[in-house]
Image (cartoon, rainbow, N blue to C red; front, side):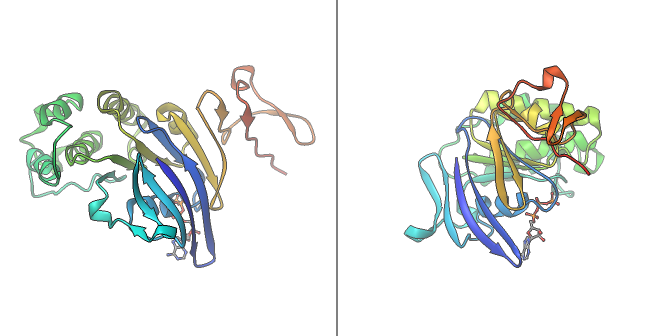
Length: 252
Ligand SMILES: Nc1ncnc2c1ncn2[C@@H]1O[C@H](COP(=O)(O)OP(=O)(O)OP(=O)(O)O)[C@@H](O)[C@H]1O
């Protein structure tokens, strides 16, 4: 996956460029207002950048210089939002069937495989209204996967859940990745989530990429507790200090 776009949104300027693995999770993380949603909208094809490219594998989705812009509904991108957005009047099974029916061409991702990986078989006859938040997110993941996406966008998919459910759903995301090798773009403001789920982390602030790397290499120290040992120098716990690049925000 490759994203390199510029877009002016009122007074805000988005100017981001990053690449992510074709069979892993790229996490876009950063504070509120950094431009995460604006980037997702460009990738999903909901907005057109002023300039730049969005590509998944060999497939060019946006290329302003070449006049390429694949409309959102033909991008074959699955999206999971913070709130599952299931159809409340349809059973879990029919919600999944909706995703399945949206697939075009060959179905590489099987119905039973998805249902089993996400452990949602016992829920098939239920109404989304009777599900817990974590269960709803699992069904939303299933519906998105069954539409046979070539890219899965996860927009703060666990932000509305409590800590225990969060871990559980993140485990299912990891399992989907393992089972169905595909690119995923995961947006969050949480450094913790970024480390847990990401293969490649992209930190954005004020519309720009300020650092990227593998979780073991890059240390997104949003929430670090450290000791200021000299102006501009903060010592953090030893086991934190494994990375090449460390972000430390100094206060005062
Ligand atoms: N259509 C628009 N017109 C003007 N400004 C916009 C538009 N869309 C987004 N912005 C601005 O761009 C900035 C980035 O917004 P964005 O929603 O992408 O941030 P974010 O990182 O997703 O934040 P959050 O974590 O709060 O969702 C914000 O300052 C926002 O007000």
